[in-house]
Length: 286
Image 1 (cartoon, rainbow, N blue to C red):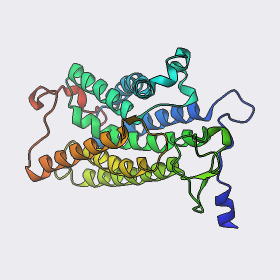
Image 2 (image 1 turned 90 degrees about the vertical axis):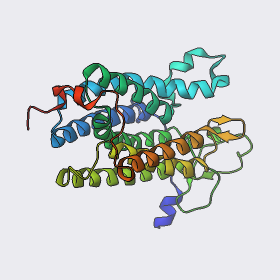
Image 3 (image 1 turned 180 degrees about the vertical axis):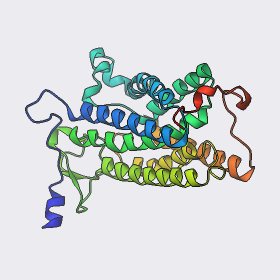
Image 4 (image 1 turned 180 degrees about the horizontal axis):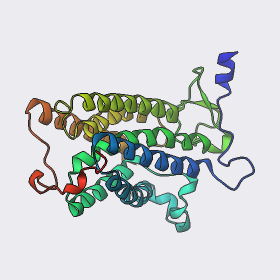
C-alpha cells in the first residue's frame, strides 16, 4: 500500500484549488518570510543587531528575485524573444537559484560597504535561512510539474502530465522527482548549518567568521552537481550544464575558503577592514 501511494506521486496543479493564487508564488513568499524571521533570530543569538539583518533582507529580496529571473531568461532567451511579456511572469516558474545567489551576494557586499559592517558576519546569518528557503521553494517546481529528472520506475517516481513532458519522452509517464531530492538535500545542509551555529555559540573562538556561508556554498553545490545530472531541463552552454559548472566553482570556493580559515589560520578578506567596522553591528539586546 505504501509503495502504491508513492507511485501516485503527482502534482495537483499550479493553482491553490479555485483560488487565483499560484503555489509557486506562495512558496517563494513563504520562504522569504521564514528566512527573514530565522536570520533575525540568529542575529539575536549571536549578539548582532537584528534591525541590521532586517534591513539587509530587503536588499536581498529586491536584488535576488529579479537576478534569479534574469539569469534564467538570459540562458533561455529563445523562449522569450517573441513573447517579452513572459519575461516578467515569474509566477509561471523559471528562476535560477545561482542567479539569486549572485544578485544577493552583490547586494550584500554593497550593503556591508555602505553600513561599514563585516560581510562575512552577515553571510553567516543568512546562510541557514537561504538553504531553508531553497528547500521550501523547490516545491514550487513540484506544483508546476517542472524541474524533473530522467524517466524512472523507482517507487517514488513522479507522474508528469503529457503536456509537460519533454519532446521525445511523451511515452514515459514517470520521472525522477529531482525537486524532492534537492529539497531533502537542502534540509540536510540546513541541519548541518544549524548544528554548527549552536556549536559556535558554545565555542565562539573556534567557529571562525565566514564558516557557515562557506560550508553552505560547498555542501549545497556538491548536491547540486549530482542532482543536476539527472535533470532534463538544465540550462546549457553547448553540451555543458551551466548549473554543474557554477556548482563546481561554488564547491571550490567553499573548500578553499575553509582551508584558508582553518588550514592557514587566516581571516577571510572583507569589504570593510576590521578596524573600520561600524558599531551598528553589535546588538543593543546583549
